Every structure is written in C-alpha cells, then in structure tokens.
Length: 255
Length: 307
View 1 (cartoon, rainbow over the protein chains, first blue to last red):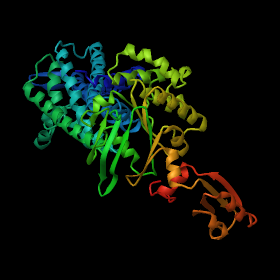
View 2: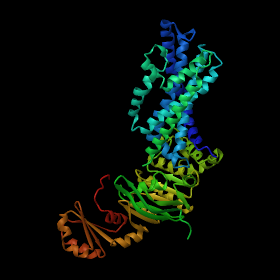
View 3: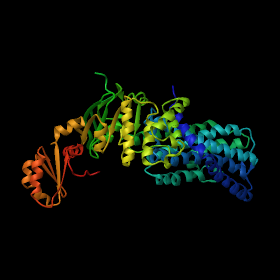
View 4: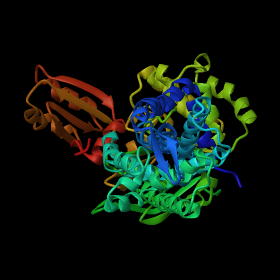
C-alpha cells in the first residue's frame, strides 16, 4: 500500500528546509533563554531542589521540565499557526485533495509533521544541554522517543483547535486558557508538592505533568516511577484528541 | 456509444432550507468540452465540488470513467486534472518545485516527474520562469502554472473552475489556445465560466444552470438559434419608455428596457432601423444575437443577491 500521507509530510519538510536556519534559531533561542535566565539566574537564588532523597541543582530540574515544554510549544505552534496557514490561507490542503490524497491523509501528515518539528527542536536543545554539561545521562536516549510522543500528543490537541478556528485570533484562547496555565502547573518550574491539594489534583489531569514526570528522572540518571501510567495518560490524550481533530476537520471540510 | 467520461444523474444538494442543486443530470463524452454557465449561486461550484467528491450529494449519483464517485475517489482522481477557482500553488516553491511536489501526490516516481517538467513548463509558456516562485508571476502565469500542475499525471479529463477569471485579454487568449491544444490531444474538459465569449469559443456543448436547475443544454449556436431572434438592435439617447413604445416596436419580436438602453430582438432589422431613423438624436447598435443575450434571456437581468 502506498503511504499517501508521505508526500504531504515531505512537502512540509521541503518548505522547512528552505527556512532551516531562521527556523532553528527561533525554535531553540527561546527555550535557551528560559534556561539561562531562570536556570542560572533564579537557580543561584534557589540553590537546589529536593527530588526524593537527593537535592539536584535547579538548572537540571528546570532543564528536564523545560525540554518537555519546548516539545509542547513546537508541536503546538506548527499544528496551529502553520497548519492553519496551509489549510485556510494558502489553500494548500485543497490543492492536495484534488490529487488522489484524502483529507485524513493530509491531517495525518500535518500531525506527524508537527511532532517532527517538536522532536527536531528537542534534539537541538538536548545537544545544547549536553554541551553545557547540564546532564549527560545515557538515559536521555530514552527521553528522546518519549518526547516524540509528547510532540504527537500536543499536535493532536492543537489540530482540534485548528479544525475549529475561523482565524488566527482564535488560537489566543487555546494559549491563554490551556497552554499557559499548563506551563505553570505541570512542574516545569517548581515541584508540584508545594501546591495546594486541589491545584495538585488539576495538575495531574494535565498531559504536560505526565510528560515531565516521565522525562525528569531520566535527566537524573534514574527510571521514572509508574512509567506505564504516565505513558498511558499521554496515549489516551493523543488518541482521544486525534479522534476529535479528525472528526472536526472532516466536518469543517464537508459542506 | 462509449461510456461517458462523466455522468451526473439526478443530483440534488441542499444546504439547510435552500436547494442549491436540483435534480441535475448531464453527461460529458470523451473528447468533448462541456461548459457550465449560470449566474452566481446557480450551483456551478457545488456541482463541481460534488464531481470531485469534496461535497456529497443528498441524492443522485455521479460516475467518472464509469466508476462511482465518491466511493472510488482515489482511483478517479489519479486520472483527473483539476484547476480550482482560486490558485493553491505553493508560494515557497519555484514553478519546477511546485510541479515536482504535486506529482508526488499522485505516487509518481521523482524521475518520471522530473522528465515531464520541461514539457509542462513549455506548454505553460513558463520555461523562463522555472526557478521563479508564484509570488513573482503575473495572474496569467499563475493560472497556467496551475494548469500545468493539473496535467502532471497526464489526465484524461480536466475539471476547470473559472480558469480565466481575473486575467487580461492576452492571458485569456493564451489560456484558450492551450485548452484547445488539450482538446486536440483528445482530452475532455468540463469548465465553468462567466465569460460568454469563452463558452462560445471553447465549448462543444453548454449547460445553463439557474437556481440549481438545468434550464438549457446544447451547442452554443443551436441554443442561440433556438431561443433568440437573429438580430439585436440596441437603442439609447432618448426616453427608453418612448422608444420601446414607438412604431419601431412593430418590427421587433421582443423588446427589453434595461436602464437607458432599449433592446429590440428582431428578424427584420432593416425596417426596424428605418422606423427608428424617424426619431432624431437616437444612437443605435445593430449586431447579431449572441450567447450573452441568450444567457440574459434565460436568467434575467437582475443582479443576484450574492452577485
């Protein structure tokens, strides 16, 4: 069977390749600024963070969380703004569907493409972290496929809002109501233990919390506890979100 | 008789309470150019979308190359070429790259696509623009690139939605010339248009739609002869009501007033012009009836709500 989504994925890749350098800088400059400003700056004030039995440097704590946030942001931006440009503004999807490619194939390509953007960004950041000697655990090799999964989860979620959007302004809701609170509530910047029970409960419903719970121990050369639970939550988010994204996108195109 | 390239039978499509396509049936034979004309909102684009499987009919059936649409969408589209009303070219790719990337959607091997690109660019008169991006092209060039892109899979049947809207006369003539070449190669074309000169020049047969219904079908010349008097005299420069009611009226089969102009439709233009000559100051234009007259007779002169 011919993989019909592949030429669509390849199309996005070829466009991106032309803009490789600016795209690379945009994708890793911001996460690095967070890391340097908060990790070294705030880290000097905070000192260490208690993780189980040991105290770890704040920059290591932050780096392991912010890499998950970068995967989330990279996938989200691609599946919202860029996918919307292709779908609605440039009518690229319409052109593709005049060829023997179905809407489902196009959406699958967009989903995987946004996940690819996430893993690309993550790889670049991981390399910088290795160079800065923040962590050099071999278990980071396991973090890599997990972060690809994080990219897939957030690209499926973003495609739901892509399907519903009338214009770019709509995405502000998604950012202010969902992504920004999640950024602060998922244990990226501080441990969840300090939060009130109610807030903690909300935090454990968010996908990013589970991503951080999986990836952080790997940075500290340990295996995550209850890994299957966290993977299961991410997989559940991804599959339910994919189903909604597909249903709503089909509805959008069916007039 | 061979299987038609495209057959629509009793198509009906409703959006809410309004029926946009109403029991529409037509066929397109191999090698034929069929034009679909009608005012805005007549159902042209909806019909077009249904033929592409992008919209599903509420009732009726469509078959393309003898295969049912939308069940066999992918098999049908691999033998179809489409130019939609709005360009969907990739702005980040050059002309050659646009063709390359599009060919891959058909599952073609890169080497096969690469081999076709020079002839397609030359067909589109874009050889000198091979490395230019769509943003650097004129409107006519973009449309020709869209046409070249639609030909990448060497389709048997082309569906063209308003292929020359917004083009200047030179660009339109070049587009017509290319479409005629494609017809000579034996391809079939279904095209929608608002231009009657385009419809008359290119189309073997026409389908006139209004309010989702087929109101006429046939060869352009036959339709004109069947529905209209051979001559039209347009008169302006006086009170239109007085002119329409003057003695000249007796020599015309039909009279229409639109704004300050009076249209006389007649078999006997000479006595009519003589009668008009009695009134000084009138300006007259005597011409044979054309497709535009037919179109306006069938669909009326009023501007449509969404027009």
